[in-house]
Length: 284
Ligand code: PAF
Image (tube, rainbow, N blue to C red; front, top):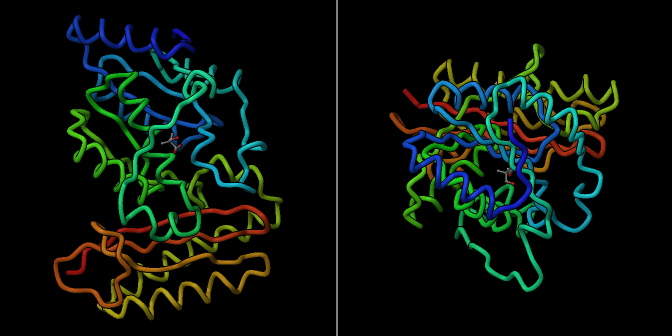
């Protein structure tokens, strides 16, 4: 595995790989690698001959008071995991290389970026869209794999890359979960042991919705309220939002219509740690 820190060098390697007809897959991360990331790598490796991983804790997607400075950066451990997962190139730029003095260009992904995660984290999705487009331009991949845990991010990346005619195919990967249902996340390490136990309530909220919709209920707003009350029953859980949305637009959805896809999305603070999760269903 080759470790690259210079954007120009990564881009020229990607260009020469393309000239050699290599099929390139990319997995973008902010490091602190866990099973979720490794499941994205497995998909990339099944589909692509050369796999690039990027590790960049992108400052522009963190708001003031968020965890940018304390975000875990276990680089040696990440590099070892990436190497054993079979990554060919690990691209690890510094913020100064990505955003040199005088950098101003940003992407505005439109209305979806002010809903849910975007409403709670102003500027977050513009930061994500801008860095993703930069990383796509630098790594020149044929495919890029993103986890469905960040479902709103995935929808937005599909929209931005489509609208900007970026040729990379965006592939969504299923949410990786711990054995008790908690979605894997680099932020799970912030949880104390009592918070870690309480955090399973997000998945229990999802199971409630799955059971109720499975029984034919279509009153999505009420089901989401029930899931939210279940989550609130944990002493340290403070839901930011728990809502069904239209799976394409992320507009809130109150009632399920036959044949349409919806997603239950949630962001919940457990103590001081903000966790997100979601579940997609198609109304029969
Ligand atoms: O999902 C993430 O880890 C980040 O938002 C991403 C896509 C790597 C952009 O910084």
